[in-house]
Amino acid sequence: MIDDQTVSALDTAAGCGTRLRQAREAAGLTLEDVGTRLRMPVQVVKSLEEEQWQKLGAPVFVRGQLRSYARLLNVDISQLLEQAQVGPVVPPTLVSHTHTPRARRIAENLGRRALYVGITAVLAVPVWFATRGHFDGSAPAPNTASLDAIPAAVPVTPPVAGSDAAVASAPVAAPAAKPAAAPYVASLTPVPRPAPAAPAAAAANLDMQFSGDSWVDIAGPDGGTVEKALIKAGERRSFTPGQVTRVTLGNASAVQVQQNGAIVDLSPYQRANVARFQVSSEGSVVPVSH
Image: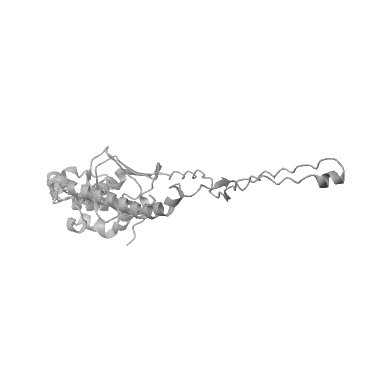
């Protein structure tokens, strides 16, 4: 017959997976019941009980799944979790691959400026030669008049009262010669109007607030890594539209995601306390496309 001390020793020797399996069976739950409540695949629950950690991904995910399972069954496995053969959480080393030498940046800026000067010269020189004759003083400047203005009429001299013979004998004065006036040229130059102001684009920032430690993997539009590390509780992250395209959150229950100030429900993108989603160019959260 096994006494109480022997049973206590066996419980202490049992690993995390065995302790969770015993608690599940004592509660009368099946693997399918646990998977439904934790939103985990049945194969993941079975791997946790069999302590097959290598099938479950990164160590931080395994620890989070074990803690979620233990909370469901009201089992304390904190000491067993430290003794389990689950690898430690080591934050990855972030290496920048987009550094550009200062000399190269200066050379690129000078090259762009020289290109702009060349294009301006190509466009401005022919225009200057074509319009030079109008401003060198060799030809009289034409008078300009608006099409809306009507030129003044030539005044007509009224006839002098008297007999027809007097009028006939009166010498007719020749009209005084007037200097030839320069022709009028109608001005069709459009009146400049101010361009309408472009409406300000609405910001759709993606904000993340961490109430617990969470391992994140965030990728940019070019497929490169924006951030891949263990973020501590109390920290926040904010990204503008187009800055990130793919996000993976470990311990997703401890992360609050907001899009343009509105809280995003992560349950459609969450499995086994890990949330995966994509961010469109407008900043909208969408499911991951495979």
